[in-house]
Image (tube, rainbow, N blue to C red; front, side, top):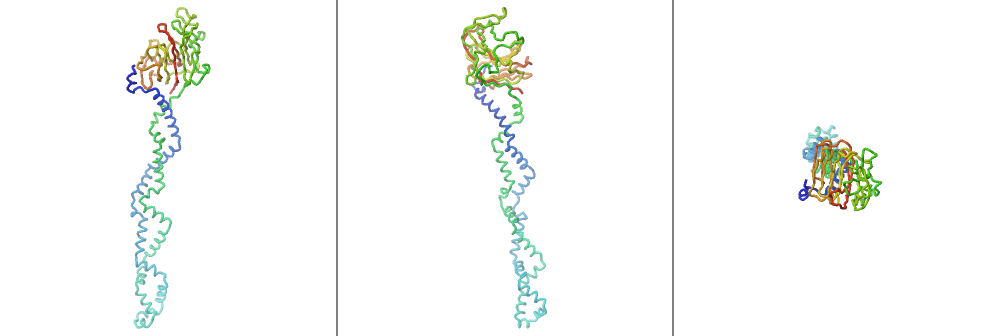
Length: 438
């Protein structure tokens, strides 16, 4: 696959962008779970249940749509004012219990009351004149009118009611056009609105829980950030791995121009692995297909390192941020004690990059062009029961469903110079390796 145009038109994301994306995905999961356990989300969900309930919404509707004049509170004050302005009733209330009324009622029950029927008697008596005048007054007529009425008691009850703190509170509430904003329910609704606008809660509900669970299902099984300083402290061992423990592991091949140097050409600088191929004369064991193990003089040294003792895995996601220098072979691969199967995450042969699966049927893979192997890229392999899928940064470059390995394989890094190549120095630089399993 040629990635030149994908890179040119932005389809191939930059490595920096990919790293930010990986970091953001990790932060996204962490943030989602943190918000999920937060008091703010708990409060939001509780308030949402309350505010969206039928009871709450009906209550809000009643308070915001009920007109003050249709309330019992208004009817109370309306009736109170109506009776307060009833002159006859107010006359009655003023007369009721007055000394004038008491004196007249006492007079009315006396023998002298009959004298009011005589105009002569009335003219000749000041008391009779006063009693006669009172009996024919508006006040007394109002008294007689309301004496057997229920209105005075109703008015007195209204006077007492409108004077209470509870009525004053209800009157202030119902007469206020903004009464909804004075309620505890409004505060709950406003709090819900503020919570729903919080960045964390907005973020939380923008996520797909199923996607979060799928992402979270990938657990890191191997993380190499190259924080070690001595090769002996690392999870890597130098040399090949064979099922037969008697076979030497530290050897090279007779048809190659470098000797593997037992981990001496491997080191870390600023948290990055450097595996060097350098000009250096050395005599080392070499495997010759016809002669077996023989001693050979080499002009270059390099290394092969693997995690056979510290880490192996079948299936999962394998990722490495790496680059290479020098027109020789550099490779990151998965292997076992046998020559096959072997899965190549990255192989640069001095001219181009390949990815693929080596089996007893041959190589099943693809050539990747259009990118500079001397620039850091993230090379990934997704290994499932049914498929092997290779990526460079975010772009899929090859997939196959044939001869999927079943056994656990270890990680390996190596550089070598085949006999047809023009020998030169070079190196592998690896910023990090991460392996996940779902």
